[in-house]
Image (cartoon, one colour):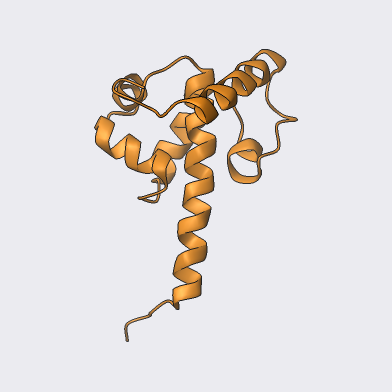
Length: 110
């Protein structure tokens, strides 16, 4: 028996992955890493990492765990947006990354 998801469930999943992807982009930029550098550290292609950040592809848990470790953020931030467990210097860089993200698109090497 094949399980199917309703359109609303699928839409909620896409929204969730998009939010997580945005937080991962902020964390990556706060860590001063390009998409290519992050992908290399994770052992995946830059295109795959980009899909994760855009919420176009669900991130594998092994990649999520490694990305959290590499960027020095915590699960609470990635999953809920809670910055309390993030070191003060990283929070400061995250704010700067948010401001940059709102002004410019993530370009080549971005």
